[in-house]
Image 1 (cartoon, chains in turn purple, yellow):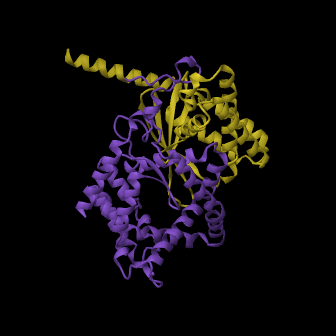
Image 2: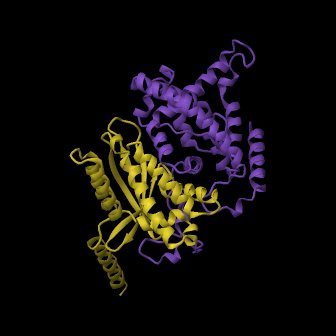
Image 3: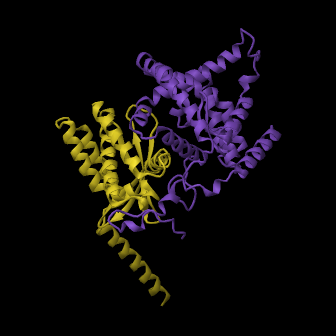
Length: 270
Length: 203
């Protein structure tokens, strides 16, 4: 496990290193394969329009709230081992304690009933992409994955590692070509329900994002980066900077009513 | 002697702090008041949508630094734009914001904004707040970047769960301009087309 961790850190570090991210404008996302990404994005969007969005609508209109809450907490509960492993990798002992107590507190009903949140022990996601970032790996190029959506090189590597960290992948028969492979069916089913649940919980928000954007691809790209940066620092802004991740850009901010000529100038280094 | 100096310092700090409080509403109070005004507008059932849009437009121009934000969103393209383009862009941008947010008014279902604290950040003040949902869903973190203007504040950015609205739109606008050969005109057209579609869909 340690070796795998080291290899991935080194690999993403190297890949991140050879990319010329230096000339990027502040806050911009490094996206060297944008044309390919846009194509995958368009396919994903079509799937959303014709499959995911209608399913999410049905799900949210026909399944009562309490049942959907149970599905949501069950899915979260299943993630516990992976989250715990990443808490430990990051040396986040407090987080590990939270994840472990949540797992135990919710175990009596196999995670379907979330007692822990009521007790003030709140769920927080961790994954290997975040762990890599904590060890200094940069994002690497932006990648839109088929079906899975926005990602980047670091987080894609993280997905692979998280797959191997998941104990469910070591239970039972694992041959995907075997017709009655319960494990593969379970893992795929879990992702599908997770996607429908996510889309249903953010139904209006995502529809609004689409409806009001002038370049939906670019909008999702920057939101993904900002969300990830927030998750990596666990919502606490770094010292010396302002809000999460974006302060640098505001250095050049010129308030309204002041001479426009100052605006758009390169950021003064203070 | 030493005691006198300490006393003088304490007096100085106390009075300046007092002055700051006296001639300036606190950043927290500014956001609280802004939320109250927005909420009154959202929950108002007696006025129709066009009138609400007008009121919201007024609220925006009074409490948001729309000109500064508009410039910031255009980034380095602001300098490249002609005065006519700047004016057309600021108008399209403003209209777009008003429409985008008023269209979401009917999604409101009893949430409240709770202001937690504020801190200085360069020329800005950051106000941390939460949207609390009575139905028990987790709180949504909202941070406000505000700037002093005259004897009050103006909002520069709203950061929802770590996602900055201004940065998001800036990146989106940059992408539109870049994929159209650096033409600001293309962004203005895209914004106006988007507006037409929003208007015709009746929202």
